[in-house]
Length: 453
Ligand code: FAD
Image (cartoon, rainbow, N blue to C red; front, top):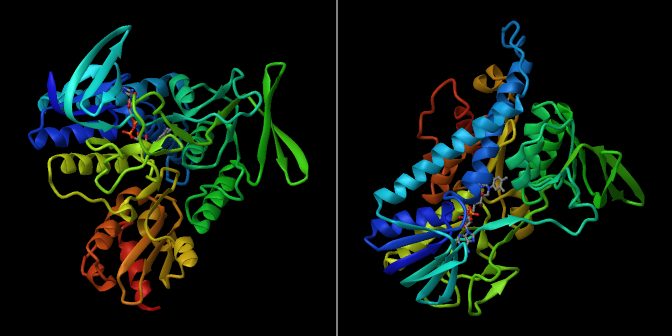
């Protein structure tokens, strides 16, 4: 069989790229060695957000008296949580399979390998077939990295993959790594009743986000009883009489924290070993690509978590998949990385887009910054949620970025993205009449604040 495009990897980068290739009229195939939907659907975004939805319900139930409810307590049922995750995941997985069928995309189950720019092999259970193609898109994503910490293979020590597949009920969870994955699991397990400790090597949580956001999240976590230890280098995980302990260096001192389970959430690596039978320009396992997402080998493209210098998020992978499909179809394609929103699904949520204050400071870009707290926002008050919004504009009032730490931040951030993408000024942004009462109306207020600077 000869294809116009073969995509290796059926995650959000791969399946979105495939759908777009098919819509451009290209004969398309996807090779997937596990399940369609990739990390995002099967062991990433979707199961974690399913857990965090329940975590939010539980947090609200704990405040039931405040909301005028009697006898409305609740507690986590891990068997129920597992079933709920599986139901949501399998429903979305079927939707992806249906979308492949509707677009007449051939799906091959097996491990793909590039033999040449026009030949790809698919291997499954010792059997191999070779497919011919004009273009190849690599979308193989990544897997959790486990640093060489002594004890990291002990029973009870998990990665995000194994924790989600087992979903153990634990009393004391220690999370090594205070990045996005670490803080989201901390939020969920704390709501489910565990004692949670985060041990982070950097001086603060969420290292790529602005210092201000990280500081506020740490304060919110402390209030919820999540222990946050920063600037701590984990030395070892040990086991004694069935209990685990994580020891770490904190300045001159060495300390340790007991645990029933440990989650290692220190990052992910690209799964590109052995993918190509020829050399390509790579750095730390990731492909260097041009602005059309083409690797150093003409006709071979790379998208998603395996792009060197890219943003490891599902919607970034999807946007890159669309761009690669357009490039292959000879259509214009481009992505503005500044427009990729970064969201963290803590309670309240965090969402940021465009320039950050830390970045502006580093690059000497003058910013007009407006910050409003959510205490006076009716909808936040009703939901007993706090937080703040920050909006940044340049001296001519063009909106450059925003950081939201509030209810529904992940939905609201796109309003700011739209403004940045279209070079809107604060005055343009304020032409919109936002509903009352809504969380969104505070965005208008925050934007208005930049005009006073
Ligand atoms: P993947 O989704 O990893 O898909 C790659 C696919 O390729 C996999 O299905 C794999 O089986 C397959 N594959 C690999 N090698 C081969 C081969 N040789 N042959 C055939 N198939 C192969 N991002 C967000 O935007 N929002 C979130 O809320 C979010 N939460 C997350 C939570 C967790 C716990 C984790 C781990 C990640 C989260 N992410 C989130 C990140 C997101 O999951 C990834 O950025 C996204 O899945 C990357 O998409 P991708 O298509 O590049 O790769």
